[in-house]
Image 1 (cartoon, rainbow, N blue to C red):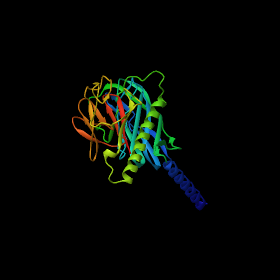
Image 2: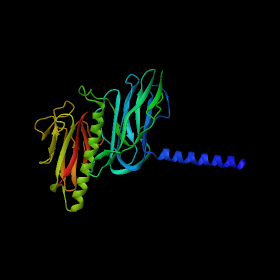
Image 3: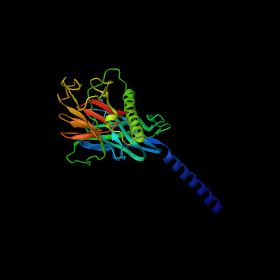
Image 4: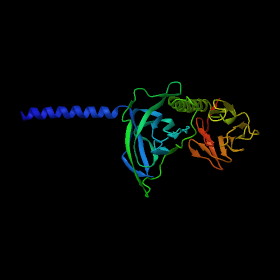
Length: 323
């Protein structure tokens, strides 16, 4: 009888272990937080986590929050090669998007999202949508199929007592600013913003493929044999593409620039794109200039196909090259 019980327990243990392995191996995304209680002024940290047996080249997430209880600060991904793609933020919704030119296996934290706790309240953070992105046969981004959304809600309790201690280390990895911008046009739904994120990743992957084809067919190809273009994704002249026929190309609010952006946050002479034998370069002349979320101030940085450039607060364009 004792042997029968032992055999039954062994079968149960084996079945449970197999089920746990399957559960861990399932491709999924979920929201988590190690701490549920905070004081006013403290930094609230939640994580978007993911597991996938398929290498991915990007991910997106949208987290719903209460602006009366929390203020978003930034998000950071430590997944190697994942670069932040800044998007316009709206109050009440954190919109995150990251992309990489090389496939990455993920199993754990995809991104840390930070908020500042406001006042005394009880609130929930909700993972409204999330996706893992891969590059399809055409070289463009596509959501990975059959990804399960796990835990969607994180409950938080914010105490009225004001904290005098900084409770969080500075973020590391590719930083995504989450300061809410002015509200988008009436009627623009949340899923359109997510679609914009996937489109930006798609342009990045497509441009990368074109770049690979160009470099693979001829080792002698240089910037003079390619056409460089800027695809405006947000801000003045959104949706328009500019072929950089004349270099250097100046960008700014002044009409004398080759590319004029009528935006109060754009300086008269904001930035310049130039070409050298080994590539294209972006120079920040004045104002805020970012490449993939990294600041470019009073110096030059190389521009690679698929790079997302932000000028001022919300003017975005994607840099691409083609033969």
